[in-house]
Image (cartoon, rainbow, N blue to C red; front, side, top):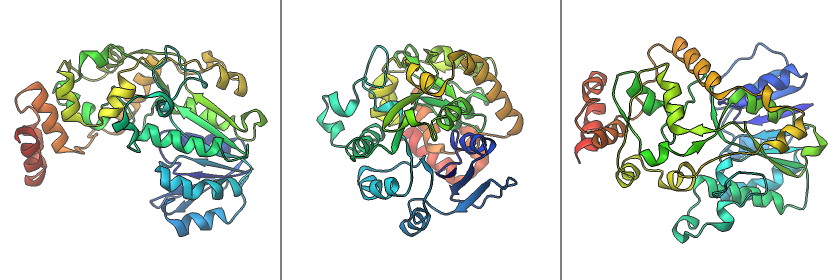
Length: 351
């Protein structure tokens, strides 16, 4: 099969392309930067998949499957959905488990936020979870079945993708490696989260390609294992000196931002029934990576390969986090990076 992967160089996409080439498929991956391939079955096309002329050039060719990892706004996808479906035998739209509303156990038929949430201000936005659900609706209403929707839960990977509730690794891991506490409200730490290794998610997606049972269907591609975010913090703390400090929820929302992700995801218990994806692919839960083992192995691998990582991505964010715990513990590290980052830190810390 000839397969096009849009935006396929991240925590899941890189694994998907590797698996598909090993399965004998010819794979083309878009990348915004120049990349080289040593595998004759894998090629990279340099360009932005959101650029109309670049994407039109790709879609002028017929593909057996297209896997779309891009993040589209609702208007963007409305302009592109038909062209995706017309260019391939199977269009795989990578959505997110964040489309689901609060449910004791998440199944594919569970209510979605877009359909049940009672928050006019939120519904007036095109926030990530809502945009994904609206894109899904365009496929549901397309009148075709040559599409598959996949909804990954939180995904981790040795390339540096390690979340701690709403904190990305460039925030919490940067602090942990410098023995600086990480603020996170106890209310979030008590909630159940589901984290899946990117390689396992990739295997699920790869086994849906060319699978007749996947056509016109949605799948939550995830482990069923779950644990509290406090347990996740404890798992990380066995590898790095992570200390988590409680803080008021309202102050945390203001400092961190992304209030809708907090309210409509991380403040829910996210427990997943993955029976549908396992049945369709022939996988078993026992074949998926244990969360504790996987997180620690991937974090160790990342640290071994990135002794000086993660870089300081946002000095202003560190200033806001320091405001939550008190003092200026990040300042001595940020001053070493120059005057501009230091100024950004001080503004966010004190103003």
